[in-house]
Length: 245
Length: 245
DNA sequence: TGGGCTGAGGGTATTCAGTACCCTCAGCCC
DNA sequence: GGGCTGAGGGTACTGAATACCCTCAGCCCA
Image (cartoon, rainbow over all chains, first blue to last red; front, side, top):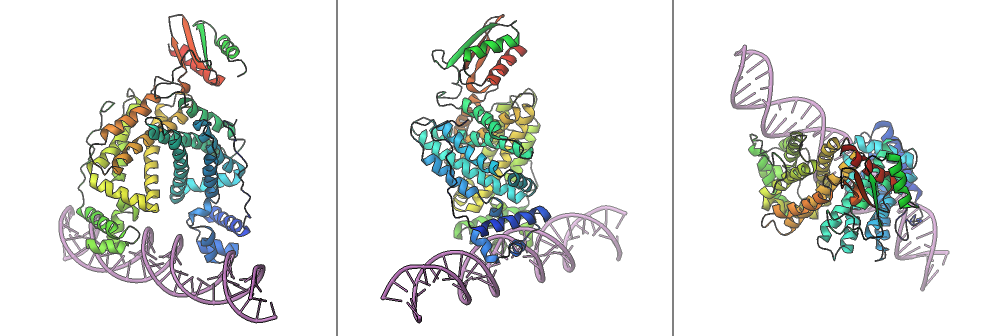
């Protein structure tokens, strides 16, 4: 259920993938899960990986970064994805799709994501780091929306609030999935959460509180029924009105 | 323009106010502004303040904390403020008022807030710290809303998104004020930004999309919805209308 | 073929934040 | 007096992060 043109392109950006990076990540997680994040030193990691200490900081600017090895890539992908937008794209749909890039990154490695989730819940420093990563995504979305909403009054406010909403909805569904152990497909839950935001902030509702239906729009369905009508009849009525949906 | 009962009580919580804490903050900011945050060591600070190194960490758990000396107090105030809510309060208005507590903390020391803003813009580590502080506020608001929305379907999602929206709107107005040098009163701008959110998420519009269901007469129910609204949401809308009315 | 360039990786020393442990001393209650 | 507590001070240690320099393989090119 992708919403905009050019949805979720294959942004794997096929890099040469240095094997040393992965070796470091593997060694780090093995130790983090065994004795805990703070009980593991950089020396422990590089010793297990069989490389020099200096090499660790060649690949990861800090100890926290090894826990989120693909976020920088994902952030770059998101930036690129948004930059490739057409002016005709629905901005809200576009940022929702951009958020789905993050979801996909998590969903691609369910076991890894769940393990990391366990770490971030326990280690305050990692939670802080994660929050700052999320903030970068939010800023990226907000910046895109800020440009797209430049002509609106309160465009900047709208952009910021909408970006925050999209991120919050995405994270809500994502964390539900992580808490459940990464079982199944989180896509649908995220879609639901995003549509929750999307329908509130859809571009045609051009002001707060202005979300009420203009009856002349072809997009609007009006159903009139008696209060005493049983629910199943109401549902059938609405269903037939909505037709294919 | 306070929105709920018991609005913004005097939460100065008159602590004994140890003078040493303030001396450390003053010394720290003097040095931070003169040579920069990262160029200043803890030893520099305690030397200027004329106290022992050990005493610094007695008052501030980390170097970053000295830059945000009153956020912990403010967070506690916010938690207390929300805990003191009545069940009859409008939850949305209540979290908006809670956000205003943060604004007030900034507005009480304009010069200090602006100086700190300059620091956080320049030092990535401080920005990260600030983001994590903001996240704590957001979590506090979301937790309150989660309880208040417990009976709603999607209550948790709604709580998270709403909390994120309120925080984003608040920060938007706050940063505008800080960028402008802390001149004037930021209250009105924050009120505007919050009302932007408030009108969108007001408790009476109890579903996204503004799908409005209401009783035209005693016996007739009119449902107006968008064609794109998913069926489950329509059903819920109708159910809730038929339910309590 | 030798020379020099580059870039990945390694090693060591240093800085500095943060912690643990112990000391002093003032006030204060028995 | 003696003992207790709590604020403040000092010192040593750990460990992340940085700076600087070394090795070595590959490679271009004169």
